[in-house]
Length: 260
Image 1 (cartoon, rainbow, N blue to C red):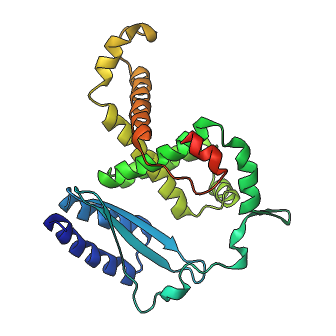
Image 2: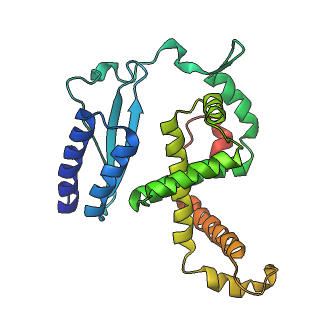
Image 3: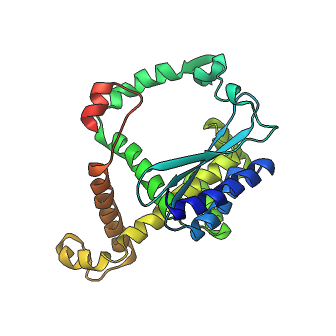
């Protein structure tokens, strides 16, 4: 094990001990980990967590990926945490996905319905893209100011015509979202937009000059720049999908293997 990874592991253990003992929620835990990531740029750090259905407790793990490849997983549980033999124990209702007017839809039934969509590449590409973006953001995190997150939340409410607190609460309940989960999703979208701009930053002008006839403008305005950024980002994602190791754990294995 190289020295860089050894030093990072020591800092991660201290981090996990503090966020577990202090009962820190995921957004604040992620913010703390970003400060550690800044000190260990040679090691990619990713925070993952699980909220235990048995007692509502949070369990954190940190994945460390060094320059030489391979992944180290570190976790910590204090004396008040759920005992390891019980972690992951599922209740009989855990297979239920949603209940509407007393009618329950199970995960198994939902998978059958979704199986119709397995041959639609855009859906599968978005799933893979989400993993690729998450991996890149774990390797090089994107910082977000509180003001940026608030603007993102406000934009989402406007887009869905959620002009009152009651309307927002109803919209979240319909989707089974807590406010914390909503913030996490908006944060992900904002970080993805920043990543897109970073990926395309140095190539937008060159692409515009090479494809000027494809755009109905004489100079590079903001909408055209955004369009080109998305084109370049899509190309970047396609390159990474082509070389990614993809394993599907649900759906029809024959379909998923062929699509991957």
